[in-house]
Every structure is written in structure tokens, then in C-alpha cells.
Length: 198
Image (cartoon, rainbow, N blue to C red):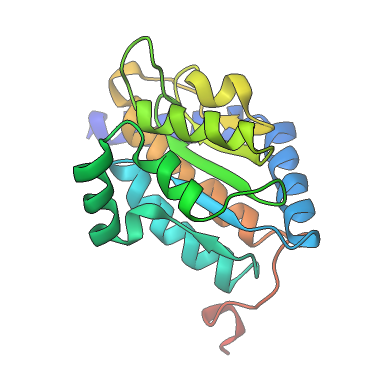
């Protein structure tokens, strides 16, 4: 029971420590993206990839923002990895998607990527490409935020109360925050079914 309570206490601590100004900045970026008719491209690996697919649904359906994730198409993703390698897979997909200055890349990552440590180099290369074409870079990341936090236009770093649970807390709070964002009055376009059911 102590382990359960400790985990839930950490969840509460993270929620209290999240930088509200950073979340507000993300919302402003997304509001501007929507106003200019830009597209939103979610990038993540592992749990971040699963979160990306779910977020695509919510941003399209609830917020009315055209959104995509390369990890939703395993055929294209695996063909690109086979032919071009893992490190450049997201950058080449963004190139094929004609990413441009109206668009934004949204990263879900525990560490934010690091070429020096060879951690999520595919995310780093994609973010580098986004910056080259003047697309906006957004993120929800953990630890120190890595490369994503360093160069992003708006990024929330999930606090780390417990180093042994940084991955599970970061991935969990990615979902908490994107749900907050799509249901925020600045972005929400459609009522969700259960909220409209009496």
C-alpha cells in the first residue's frame, strides 16, 4: 500500500509543479496554428508514439486542427526505416508531408532527444528539419527536456519527483496535458459525447 500511495503522491506533486505559463504558451501556439490553417505533426517513440496517435484523434476531432503522426502508418514507417534508417525516419516523413512555415511539430518524448547520448536521434533530426523550414516546434517532455526543450517555441517539461519513475510519469502527464489543451476554451470546437449526454 505504501508504494501505491507514494506513486499517487508523486502524481499530485507533479500536477502542482507543472509550469502553468508553459502550458498557456503551448495553447497560444496552437491557437495561432489553427488560425493560420497550419497542420500539426506529432512525433514520439514507444509510449510517446502511442500518445501521438491518440492525440491526433483528439486534436482533429475536439479542437479541429488537422493532425498526423508518422507512427500511425506502420507500412510507411517500416519502409522508411528499412530504406533510410532509424535516425532520419521522422525527418524524411516530414519532408514527404511538405512540412512548412504554417505547420508545427509536436514532440512527446521522455528525454527530448540527444545526439551526444544517441537517445532519440530521430526526434532530434526531425526537430532540426522543422527549424530549417521555419515550422514551429512544440513539446511535452521529461527530465531536462533535451534538444526539444532547448530549441522549441513552446515546451512543457514534466517535473521529476522520482528518478526511477520518470518515464511513466512523463508519458502519463503528456496525456493529462494534451487533454487539458484540447478541452481548453481557446481550442475546443466540439463537445465530447459523454459531456453532452444527460
